[in-house]
Length: 262
Image (cartoon, rainbow, N blue to C red):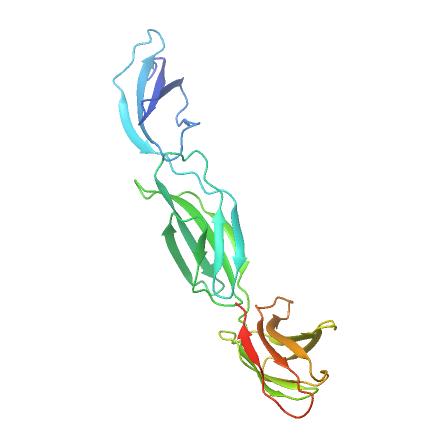
């Protein structure tokens, strides 16, 4: 066709029979305003500028990729799990799709799930670990994925477990607890809060190697509530484990009850 003035007609039609076309001499050319996750039949023919006669068309079929999810949101963070949600992808109504959620820690250990649950819970995570989380839309028909959307979060520290009041005196108690799990290599302390009716809360801290603490400024014959949590150097803290005991008026005693709050 050298020396013969001509142009090209590009026509595209989706699976619902909606058709559009343009006449262009740009090659390559961009077809815009298409619908995500939709199959298009595209044809191109040569058009003589002098007469408007068209050649036989050449056809190709292509499917547009899905649109990505909107903003990611984390509604709750725990020691070993996070609850993740995201805004719906645009223009995907009626297009069967699902979502691939991928998370990677600072050691490059990566896991992923495919789900249509939104929100969804990521479990079996490691405490005090930063995770990069991505979500992309996946077409069920072809498996084609959208570009991913990212968010970063850090799991909470593990909490001490089974707080016990082992010795109760008139003005003191001895607390004992099980050390938190999966906290190797993490710098932290324990914060103990204790309260009784008519007084504000008091605090005592102890190092991470401790599993006991003596509280020695209590009132005799009074009901006390005790709680302990793990505190990181940046101030982030775990959930609290708690116990209650009634100090004696005289002599020794044992704790009345203890429980952990989850």
